Length: 614
Image 1: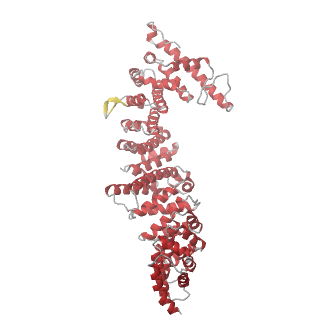
Image 2 (image 1 turned 90 degrees about the vertical axis):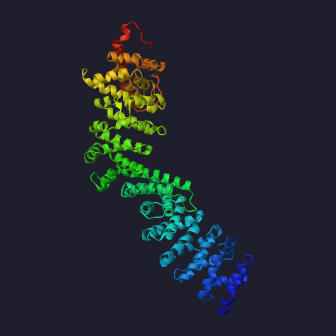
């Protein structure tokens, strides 16, 4: 009987497969029996399975094999202990039947075939690549299959493969990663598995000889994994930051490679690649920033550690991405005076950061470097003079030119203001000719930005720089050369240099900034030159409205954006009202000091010219 079946089924199947794509019921029964191994030898079973698997490459046969029950029979009969050749053909049949066929994928789920597939990966290592292709065909673009695979340990399987596989076994790695990518794109929550996966993927992504098609899939997976709930695990173990730094270098390497040799695998679009690399770079920078800002980071990487030494050395790199990462890390570390002083003493990073500003124009670098410098100067004020001496004023215009990012412009202006604070010498440096344009000084460049920029935060920060200059000049003895020099220069640049201060006064969004403005005007009119400079201003009507309010109302400002009439009570804690009242009183005092100084020192009044009415 066995011999008769063996003799008849192969030609009968060959004839059916070459015909009208139908299977007679009798043949279906014979095929099912053969697949189960009931009534034929091993060689016949293998040949039948191979013929069916080859036929399943065609879309039409996939439906027929599923509806005839042959796929279910094959799934039920799959055993890891079978001979390798037979097992291989069963895997091919299952994989081909699942390709773009959701009803057949449902059969695989119903017959619990997926669980057997994962067993095959452990029992038959040579077939592992084929198994991963089958699993990919099962999962591809079908969410029920993806959820089924995840529920039954796909992530653990992929993790095991990534841990154990030789990096030369690329097919199994590629399809393991493709399967992982499908799960991640479905937004299935991974829980505590995510951080381990990220670490593994980073290790693979930074392997020097990895092929681009593998690297591309890894980037896609990492991008999906860069969510706060997954990366927050690195707050307690920041060690992956080492590989993130390496990843930045690999991103640049592949971007350079693709620009020089744009040949890509057929299924990868160049625009998609460019978009993915840029997104990965942005995501990596964000993650590096988050990790380096964690409490455990400085515990693991203190000053003097090999890692921190290498980060400081990166400031000499020409790679803008590595520079951005290094500056972000240093900026996040420089959050307290003790750390800043240690960093300055050990590495003098402020000098390296200034050198980076001289060489770079990329906005991301400027933002990161400006932030790091700002934090270092705040935490270690003693470096203000050395930062100026290192030449930062020669490159601060790069911040101002970053019109596409107001934050970067504001960063540069804020840094200048902090450098001027408590340093009259630095304030005087703002008036010196620039090396690249002797007809222009740093303060003139800043005022040019003021005239061209309508962003209120930018104009306010420029006003605060002027206030800092006036404040530093006033701290010096009246006969001090620097004080006299600053007063003369301010007078010479009036009225333009005082216009930002007037803007501070007439805005009603930030009361504290308005108070700084009154303080600055009160300082300015304490000399005839200063009073004359104010007299040269063309003051808007709004200025006189605010002036009257400051004189006649005891408390007309609060911490809220809109002015609050005195007859209305303001919401909020009593302390808020008290602070606002005190600030309003200080404003009134400064207004009276301003008026007194202006009337006393304005030479034009003595010659009979009347001041503008208010």
